[in-house]
Length: 176
Image (cartoon, rainbow, N blue to C red; front, side, top):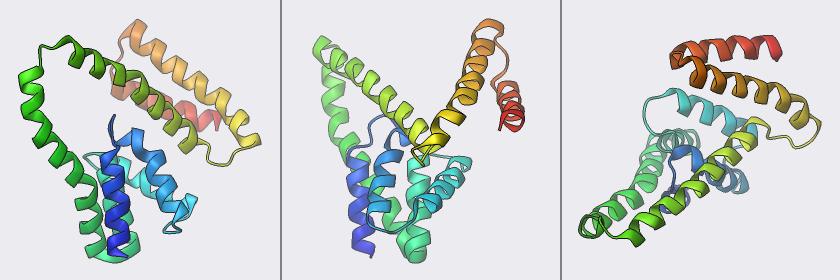
């Protein structure tokens, strides 16, 4: 069990470009495919991980490890997800420091932005509507309305993000 957890999360750690939210679909596929958690349990775990400070992917790995194998599972899962990043960052930092002015390096890093954005959007849609079917379209319109209103209020009136979050929560209560 510990080896399986370590291998799952070291694999996730190797592909975790774009931050924690971008790899949530990868974690979900691996965890539910192996039968470690159901889709509903995974959603609850990610929701709890999102409330804790720190990276949501690391928090999710820790919680999933704890739920499936106790404290040792939490340690193994956390080590698995952070080890690749640690090794890669240490190895690449010297290279990028020397190559920081190279236009090819700059361009390749800018090229990762659309991919990361797409992964985050996919994670939001897939996580928000895990049951493909009628519920997707029924909830999509109010969600897009709330999102659009929040974006408009942030850009046009430059309201404080905490106020926007509170207003979005209230709108969610009304609409859902």
